[in-house]
Each structure stands twice: as C-alpha cells, then as structure tokens.
Image (cartoon, rainbow, N blue to C red; front, side, top):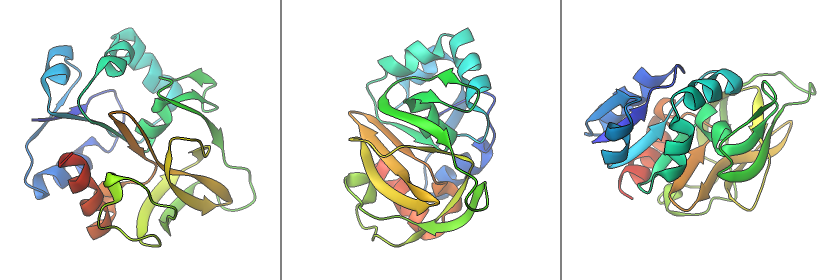
Length: 192
C-alpha cells in the first residue's frame, strides 16, 4: 500500500488519481502506524511551509518522517519540507537535504507556473526520461542546488528540480500533472 501523507496541504486527490491510473492502491493518512507499515510514502502538497511544519510537529510526524526507511517522495511543498530551512514563513524544516528554500527574486513572473523542462538528470527516478522533457511547475519558492540535486530547472535562476538522499526523493514539479513524463517518474519511484 502507498501512503499519501495527510498534513492539510492541497493536491492530494490529484496524486491519488495518478497512482490509481498507474494501478496502485493508496490511502491518505496521518496515522503513524499506517505510515510506518506503508510500502512507500508520498508527501504531496500545495501549501505553505510554516503551517505544514506546524501540523507535522503538533502530531510528531516530523520525527516519524525522519525515521522512515521505505522510499519517500516529496512533491512540490514536500520537497521544501525536506530541506533544512524555508524562507516561506521563516521556518526550520526536516533537514533531510542540506539546502535552503528561498523566494524567487522578482526578475520574471512569480509564481513559476506552467510547463518547463529540466536538465542534468541523475538517478533511477529519471530512468527512461530525457533531459529537456517538459513537466508542470507551480511555485514561488525554490530549493537551492546542492550535493543532493538530481535535476536542475532554470527559471529566473537555476534551482533543484529533483533531489535525493538515501531513501528520500523529492521533485519540485508536479508529476501527477506532467502527462507521460510525470507518469514515468512516478512509476520509477513506485518500482524502487
């Protein structure tokens, strides 16, 4: 069973629909036992870092996430929460990735919304995916490039489009809204 972490962030239904389309059953939960027992955990999200971290901390889910040993995928806000700090609400996050999340400077339209590509792809998450393929983004904050960066997107400035450390994976874009490319990336995660 795939567990989608419930933490008062949006877009969970879209991710669940994408999993169903790929032939996977999933549950939406913030129950610690269900999360620990899940084959994979996905932290989807459209929301705000400070309120999301507050929800996780109040339920001690922040500590639970760090203890997970199965593959975990953060999507959009999920990626931000896996970094050590977010300027969105000036909040300490989970610290899985040693990278800060910053607001885009106002040199172009913010939020970054729509189709854009990525480059410098590394790792099994991108098996069968070619640099330059388009995926769907919607965000005003970005994760810095770090040693954990698996893919880079350039919008206003280069940023981490995907990250990986141990059993933790994260993408800034929305694979559930990214057509065949997104489905391939989700399938690669689910087959880990």
